[in-house]
Length: 113
Length: 113
Image (cartoon, rainbow over all chains, first blue to last red; front, side):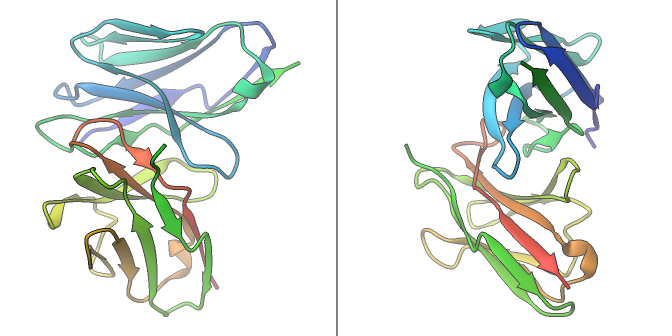
């Protein structure tokens, strides 16, 4: 089955700096890659997603890049703000195998004011 | 905005007791999921449900677990004989189709004592 590796596990940046979180996946059939943000005690919420027919997607300060050949995808947050502090999870799923999401282990992002 | 709702928000139960966690998915969604998150760990897939039957399940979802859609709106997870290691946050999610954005409920924190 699918295995998603995520790193770093923790990331501390200064407000205004950029943050990058990286994930790799094992199943070459995976074609949907969402990123979820989870604040303490809250539900995971989708912040951006990408499908395998696209190499990059951007939404204001957030962007995701996908390298299908290398089987990795990354989340980029620019101009970080204290409210970006949370745990971020990457995930993957496929049309042909497990349609449910397989999550990475999470990255705790701390933005220092 | 429609959202997935879960009850109760917190459940404390004695080891060996049965618990039922309840979820109301978003009304026009076709796929329903249960995930769990042990404190400080990643979100783990348990089971997905489509067209009134289980469509896939993980190795975690053993004979102690069952799911049901007793009526047109509720989706339940039953744990027959709880163990200490079942203590976790249980998230219900739903999606319009498989392999698309999953919307998560706010979770039920299950504590087995």
